Length: 167
Ligand code: S3P
Image (cartoon, rainbow, N blue to C red; front, side, top):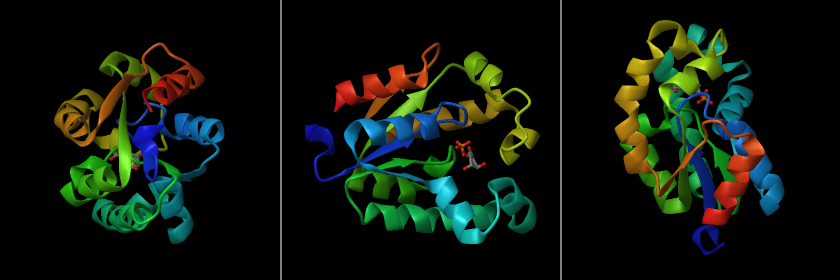
């Protein structure tokens, strides 16, 4: 557990990689508090993420996300799951890396397409093609993360166990 001692454990990765579910399991396994940045934002704004995108736009969402990330970076001992676009902002990446051990949950595009098929809760999937978006972001996840864990074909509890083994 050296890698997370005095730090947060942070999950990053594309939509559909299981960050929230794996994060919850990790918090249970490690006896830590769990925080999901999207959930925090939607509680603070009093609406769901799709509603927020529709009402205020992506830029507003990104600004709120940045505030939440900065807040969480000043705390320790959390398990934090982030939204898939958190790595688009260099300041976020710096905060997350300084305050936490950053784990990239990944999967190939075919697996992600299957998992996200018919998903109406993720605003960005409605406009951009998933493969394009993934391609644009892959390098950002790689740079932001301390380690990568492949989630394809694995149940969330298997992924969580693999993450624990890396700590
Ligand atoms: C986003 C991913 C979503 C949410 C928002 C934007 C993105 O989170 O933050 O819809 O830019 O990839 P999940 O990765 O939890 O779906």
